[in-house]
Length: 117
Image 1 (cartoon, rainbow, N blue to C red):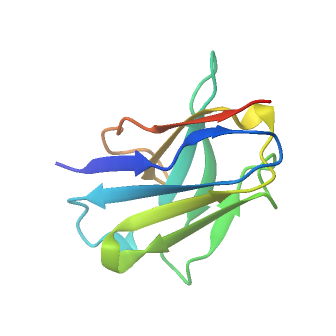
Image 2 (cartoon, rainbow, N blue to C red; image 1 turned 180 degrees about the horizontal axis):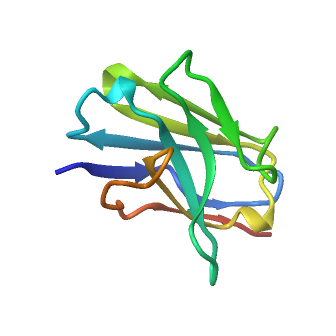
């Protein structure tokens, strides 16, 4: 069964940075899968914030994180990453990884990011 283990979250002040990792297990032909990071803010629905494609590792971002977040992948390790810079309080939430076109696999536990003074 496909499993995701997200890590790297924490508490940071506005303007700070964090680096998230997601180890993906049992995804067949991982390098040919489009992968994504999702965020669920308190009281809100889970939303897609970053996507990395299987062609030239091209990327796409939600408008409110564009220029601040960077998604990357290491296919040899079946791992995707999300670098979060210039964090804002509204970035607070639980961050998850899953398929980038649709979240077709079971969700992992996520990693909590809290941006607060």
